[in-house]
Length: 354
Image (cartoon, rainbow, N blue to C red; front, side, top):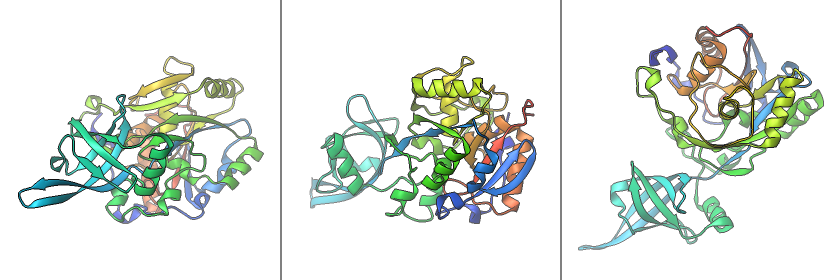
């Protein structure tokens, strides 16, 4: 298939820069097969049945965006340069892979100071990424990073406004636990404690998995034939408990519904042999039309970027033509798009997607 098969025109004013308040008041488009209903996230209790299981990604977003300065001696005396850093992931040698702007102004061995408590030494670079070693680790690092860093808002929001203190709450799920993501599992941002309690009362159960969402989730697809695209790898874990819960739900006739494409990609990785098993590692699964879903029966997700791998994923679940109709409806009805936008509940009709 061609990249153009997943394109659509989105008015600029449909890109949300703040979430709905309260979280669960966001709009939700429900697509039950080809039947579309306009609802609210709070209406999930009407659409989910006793015995259904939601799969939730419990990754925690770190404040990965840092601004600091490096100084060096020159013929003109001490000079300083502003350095912007976006952390990507920890490396096996104890350093962090990071995007640095401008990378050309930071030499190996130089130190970037972010605050009185946090600095990093440049230890090298490869493939456009710097390798930074911080002056502290563990809880000390977490505290210093929280004090000095900003939440790594997606480019389409960061271009419109800077991250602020409100994003520390808004860009984090209420069940966030395992630190390591540099982007949020955004469909999960619609849930609050009241909605979770209502779903439990309804008889809906929950399983938690971890996939640390990387900055690569925002990388554009640059090939015309999508078969030539290489996905970025992200670390994830499906525990034995979660795998057993998901398998038991399917065996009992309940539906397994991941909240977000990250949770879906992870459980499909763990179920690639036909039935879900405990799994841990780096996944670069690329879900496109024709994919066989072994774990997910439906999906709750936000509205995605044109020509993105996530548009390909939802097209694989619902069918390319059906997704085009869903997105046309969402645009016509003024749904809010992307990370802080509205939600969709996608329920396949059981037929093979076109």
